[in-house]
Image (cartoon, rainbow, N blue to C red; front, top):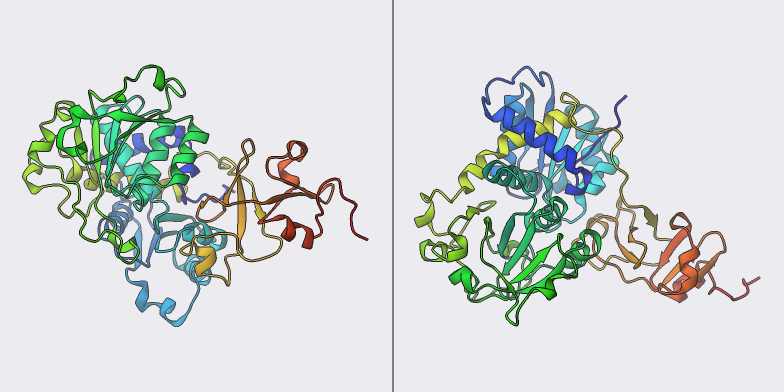
Length: 447
């Protein structure tokens, strides 16, 4: 029996698997009506706790074009969730006989990870809070690949609200994995979160440097532009002048709207947001750049450039159908595109004592406490980096216990290097470790 696969994060797919999905999507796109015999009898369930147009409809269109059926809960506020039913119970019920695949959108970060733990059928993350949106990322990568013929080595601008856009976060990780270069042009005050920057640096060898964006014209006039490349880590400073890395050519501009639904009280008031129009696109470095947007848009992309051949955001939306056809067919086991078993993820550990260590109030471990048992994940051994297993929030660890010796070490201590990952347990501080029966290394164990 094939091992159950989920698509919770873009990390759940290898580069080879992503390329296989792109190839399948390209084949589907040649005639969307010719594949109705691929998934007959299969049913996908749309469980949407947040509003959606493109994502929900493109998934439903994709399953129908594959010959399957769709059941939909487009507004979970009128479902049993309004009566207090937990997400874990919902996915167990719907996946227990109603549907063969669950497509989930939820406002809490890590919700899709929790759903995958309880669902008997594949779960597809259609967006969890400001965390990730892997199928939008696949659609974006696919569009870039179709337009440019490759992803490696491209120079891609990420512009606008980079802090709260889950699409941006997933896209940045995937671009780094493919070896593309990233130019961050953030709206002031809405830069990439520190945890995203840290992961790009530690896992992908990306070295951020200030960029000289004078050739980007209006688009970068009010922003501090950062250039990041996984190809020349630690060497960029050797080639930059006093103004920073020179930006002379851009392959794509990925624009995002202000994610006002995620703003805190008072945040973004009187915001003069970035805008891309004809005059901005006339900048020297942007003359050949395709313009992308996950939609919906507000005023950040002027309607005057809709007819510009460089604007591909409506093509991008349309390509969501064939790429999601490939995803659904693969997870349903009808197309042999995915490896089995899946690549092992980072190891996770229970929280032994004390309150939930995740400081993110919107993490599913804080919003659904009945079934989301708090856990931490070891993201990096050297240097030690620990994060919430659900929402990927960086955690501050004050002590690391060893199950073999029943002692705890400080995070930077030399003795910790001798502790195997499977023997580690993480604590907020030394006092919590000691209460759990892990005295400091070198001390006698209390009788």
